[in-house]
Structure formats: structure tokens, C-alpha cells
Image 1 (cartoon, protein in one colour):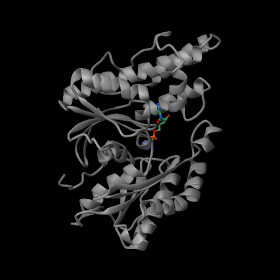
Image 2: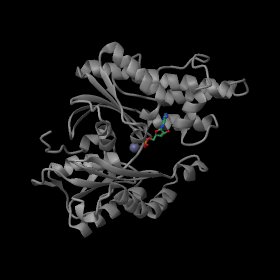
Image 3: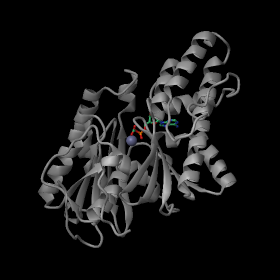
Image 4: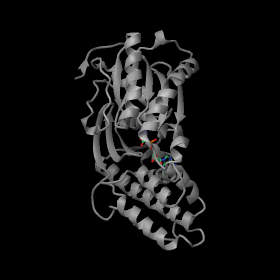
Amino acid sequence: MRAHCTYKVTMRVLGIETSCDETGVAIFDGDLGLMAHVLYSQAHIHAEYGGVVPEIASRDHVRKLLPLLDECMKKAGTTRQEIDGVAYTAGPGLVGALLVGASAGRAIAQALGVPAVAVHHMEGHLLAPLLEPNQPGFPFVALLVSGGHSMLVEVRKFGDYHVLGETLDDAAGEAFDKTAKLLGLGYPGGPVLARAAENGDPDKFRFPRPMTDRPGLEFSFSGLKTHTRNLWNKHSEEENARADIAAGFQKAVVDTMVIKCRRAMQQTRCSHLVIAGGVGANLQLRETLSRAGKKYGWSVSYPRIEFCTDNGAMIAFAGYHRLLAGETEPNIIRAQPRWPLAELMSTTSPR
Ligand code: KG4
Ligand code: ZN
């Protein structure tokens, strides 16, 4: 169980992210902001298997984490003694990969005599837009779309998250990854499919807009995936079919998200929309939602591309707010592969 106690006015927090196939380390300081962040992506290693191989991911985190920690400290120009707390991703994610960051985070905190806090990976994604200069104000609606999750969340303040709707099956990023694999485009699927789509006609084939003909904020991408597979089986020999199908698929996903975001904004009466998570790096999604924002009168913000996908900065930032609120936990190494966002305890942060 976590306990609460008062802590200092500002802090310098080391953040560690190892939940999947990116090793991320960052240092966030309450006064100076993000001092440094470094990232190593294993994507090229997993590419030959067409997806993340958990054991390879864990072993690579072991190899890369400590050199990245040194590099990050050097980049930030800080010493170990100046670190006031450690934040590590405790879940959701791959258990072996999480254990690497959790063990290192806990051990460093123990050695330095500072508190450590287990951070929820999706809270990191949710708060990543706040690392940017033109931060959205609370409350806002976040479209959180990553490789493992698709959800709309009302963010009322730090630690106060209300899930408005989730995917019933595949996550958006997973749908991109599987579709890219089907089309023989490689891994990771999102960026390669988006690139292929640039040369395609999105209206050449008809695609459904799943779950938009009924009320609600749930997503479902499995029907779209089947539709795409059937189209590909039928048309794969045709000229430019790969690019046309990629473009049509991407447009269907983007349109579906825009419709759901509009509903969420109407339902919550929020005026700020935030796009977060790996699929938030998709340029068509960013542009289309920005246009929708102008049309319907919402402000739309998103993190820079490198903070959409997994990174240590968002973990340092989320951990900073939790530690500042006085959150502590017992001296344990916490790795929680399944951890619903709804179970996340709120911070006592006054902000
Ligand atoms: O947030 P993230 O880095 O990891 C998870 O927490 O899952 O998201 C990774 C997902 C992958 O499925 C990847 O294909 C997708 O984000 N992605 C994209 C783009 N860049 C990454 N999807 C669509 N378009 C992109 N440009
Ligand atoms: Zn992520």
C-alpha cells in the first residue's frame, strides 16, 4: 500500500521506461523542466520477427539501461546526489521488460536514499502533452492510442482520470501493426503503413467506420482488420493496391477517431483535446483532428512525435507529480503487467 506524506516544494526526478521495446531514461526538474532524455529503440531487432519478442526485449533492456543512465546524467549535467527521487514504469507492459526498469529504479533509489515511485505507463502517455510549451489546461479529453490501448479519457487534474470509452478488441496501434504485416510492409506497422499510404488513393476501396453508427465511445478494430484482409486477398495483384489499401485503412481509422473524439467533447463539454500514445505520431490523425478542432471550437494539442511513442520523459514527469504529492511506496520492486488505468490511485497534488 502507498502512504502519503509531505515532501519538498520541488524535486529532480530520474525516470526510467522499459515496458516494451524502448529503453528510455530522463531527468525532470520542477524548476528547470526536462533536463535531458535519452532513448534507445530495439525496433530493428524485433523487425525480423515481425513483432516484439519479450525475452529479447528484456535482455536488451539489461544491456542498454545502465549506459543510457550514465549518458542521461551527463547530458543533464547533474550528479547522482542531486537526484531527489526515481520514477519507473511498473506496468502495464511485458513483465520481464518491466522488471529490468523496476529493479534498476528501486536499486538506484535505495542506493541514493531517495524515494521511488511506480508509474503507470498510460498515465505517462496521458501527461506527455504537458511537457510541451503550450500546455492544455485542465480539464481535457485525451485520445490515448498506443500499441496496447485505445481509449478516451477525461483528465480532470493530475491523477484524476475518467475512462470514457475503450477498445473492445484490438488497440489502434495493434490494428496498424497487423495490417502492415498483412500488406507485407514490415514492423513497426504504424510508421511504415503511414508511409505507404502517402502514395495511395484512400477512396479507391470502401472501408467501414467501425462503431460509429451506434452511440457510445467504444472502439473496435477487428471488423476493419477482417475487411482489409478480404480486400487484400481479392486485389493484391492489382497495381498500387497495397498503397491504396493502406491509405483507405488509415483514413477509416482516423475518421473513426475523429467521430469518437467529437462525441467525447460534446459529452464532457471540455474544450481541450489531447492526442497521446504511439498512434498520436500519425500525421494524418494530427492534421485531421486539428482541422476538426478549428471547426468545432476545441484546442487540440499533442506531444512532439518522439514523446508520442514510448520514452523516459513522460515517466519522469508523471513520477515527479506523484512524488511531489508525497506519494511513497514500500521498498519493493513493482512490476504489474496488467494494470487498468481505472485502478490508478489519484495523487494528492494540489494542482
Ligand atoms: O505508445 P507506443 O510507443 O507503445 C505502446 O505503449 O504500445 O505505441 C506503439 C504503437 C505501435 O503499434 C506503432 O505501430 C504505433 O504506435 N505507431 C503509429 C505511428 N507511429 C507509431 N501508428 C500510426 N502512425 C504512426 N506514424
Ligand atoms: Zn506506450
